[in-house]
Structures are given as C-alpha cells and as structure tokens.
Length: 359
Figure 1 (cartoon, rainbow, N blue to C red):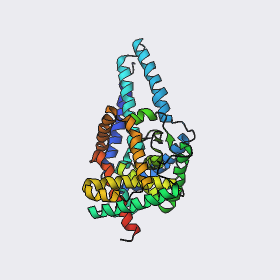
Figure 2: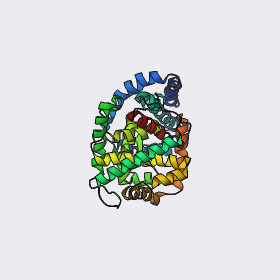
Figure 3: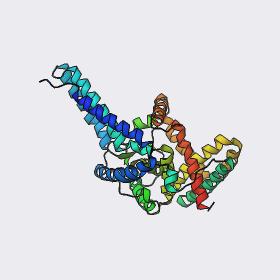
Figure 4: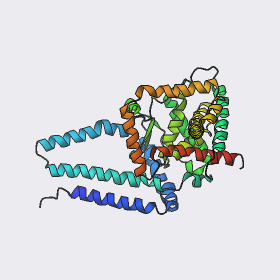
C-alpha cells in the first residue's frame, strides 16, 4: 500500500492544532500558566536545554540557519528535480516542518506570553502615571547615571570597553545569580548569552539582540554600543528565563543590572532606564525634558550620543521592514500595543521607585 504523502503534514497539523488550543486556554488562566508552566515545566526545561546549548560559544540556531537549513533545502530540491520525491511529498514535508516548529515554539516558550504580568509577580503596583512622576524618575536616573559614570571613568569622551565583549556575557549570569537571591523568580542556572555571528545583517535590521525559542539561546549583536551591551544582554537573558513581553524584559534588564557588583553593568542598566524615562518625558512634555536634560553630565551625554551614532551606519529600508514585521509579531502574541509596548517599562520603573522609597 502506498503511503499517504500528506500523512506527515496531517500529523504535524494535529500537533500544531493541539498546541494552539492549549495556547488559547492558557490565556484564560494566567495564574495556572505561571505556576505550572512558567515556574514549573518551562523553568526546568529551559535550564536543561540552555545549559546544553550553552556549552559551546557558537550559536546552534545560527548554525542551523547557515548550514543545516540550506543543506536540507538543497537536498530536497535535488531529489525533487530528479523526481525521486513527488512534489506532494516535498510540499508535505515542508508543511510538516512549519507546523512542527509552530507547535514547538508555542509549547516550548510561547505560552510565557500568557503568564502573570511581571508587576504582579514582583509585587509592584503599577498605576496611571502622571508627568510629575515621570520627571521625578528621570531626574533620579540622571543623577544615578552621573554618579556611576564618574565612578566608572574620568573625562568627557565616550565610554569604551577595556575588555572583550565575551567577558560581559559572563557578567550577565553573575548578575542574575545575585538577583535570584532577592527575586527568586529570576533564579536558576541558564546558559549565558552569546555574541551573534550574524551581527552585521542583524544590525541592518536594527536588531540589538535576539532570542531563539527553539534552541533557547540568547544572542547579542556585537555592534551594540559598548555602554548598552550589558543591558541588552540582560534583556535577552530575561527572555531565556521565560519573560516574553518586551517591556517586562526591558525592566528586568534594568532591575538585574542594579544587582550587579560591577559599576559598568549598573551604569549600563541605569542608562537603559534613563533612555526610556527620558523618551517618555519628552513625549509628555518637551519643555520639562529640556530642563532635565541640562542635569545630564557631559560624560553621560557623550555616551548617549555614541549610542545613537553607533546605529546610524545601519539605518535603511531593511530596518523599517523589520520594525513592521516585529510589530505584527508582537500583536500576534497579544501585545496589543505592538512596538509601543516597549514604553510601558516606565510604569514598572516608577512602581519600583515608589516601593524603594516606601510610598
């Protein structure tokens, strides 16, 4: 009896449908997702997989993209051209792979989009933010950035790393280990972030870091500015720890940086927070932001200019297309504000600011 050429696709389709149904049900009970999936299955699964993939510094996901996938497609096309494989079987195989990857993404990481909001996990009470609070936060972060910058180095020239970028990746896990003692939900043993081999193509897409939900690897673009390298690595490491929402990963990056023993890492996190708080203030009241900007030290201003300049060579149409695609991806995963969801980090910083001051 001849085997049904669509059997693989049908099997994978059933698997993908089951994963989709589970995803829809997960949205109805975030508390259950948090307890049994995010802090249960996923946390154990992610630590095992990421420790295995983290044994080597080379990215397995990039190897698959550069070598395994092209080789598979070349062999499949050759067999198709030689008619050793009917076109139906070729299409069925490709469809089965696509559906299987969707199911793996959903069950292996995607359900984290349905977990409890980070504010609820961390006991931070977020509320409607008034511009006065945004200004107060921005001023506090500016003062903190000024102090850390002065401690880090003298002079007004832009900060430059005096050590390999790979050492910064090692500092990420050290900071998370310290943060895990204070914030248990961030604890655990995971592979450290990796520097992306495809950093230049990613830079043209305006991607500072990227997380692979299939191999559970966090990647950082080696073209990221020195001053924000640590904060970007912390952001991608937050995704590895199951915090899927972009605004929450940004806040976690800031929060974990503050727990580091290294002045550079704390400064990197502070500057990340200052950028978002400053942008929020500028959007709400440009005149107030102009006043606060005068409190930035020359060194901090120099670092912010260097950060902005570092991405200018890569600006272009590709970055615009990526932003549109990323916007669609975020909305598809129930981040209704799309790329604007990154701005909600300010709410969490203000809640943390209020909590630290006992308000």
